[in-house]
Length: 189
Image (cartoon, rainbow, N blue to C red):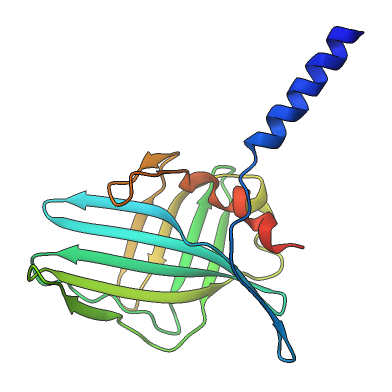
């Protein structure tokens, strides 16, 4: 009996430490309502032939409306073609269980900003807010994301998710497949 209690205690302790902590970046309540967002996480990184693409996600809740704040960062010594968001832009998330979750863009048309750095490199930064519908995010709490498709204005680009990777940008280990499993709970309370 003592061994069974010890095993149960160890199991519960391990499960408690295995959960990701909620890192809230913004938490505001005022007369207009409430806004809460998680800290940005790198969910995609590709570096090939001098071209770098990084995609960051942060979850946000504005008066109970759940959204993904997506930021796309591209770096290259060559010219960077603009991919734009418009009213028809969407993010499709393919889950490990076979289901697809669609997020709808909710912002003004944008192609981001092109910035030259001090080494004459080109950097394009573009951000957008993508909304969940009430019924389409429940599966994200339990099933990993394996693939993301982004419908830009005029072009669709696919981004495979990795189980985990160590970023070249900041040398931190990220787990993009489990991003929603780990962080959706942070905005539900």
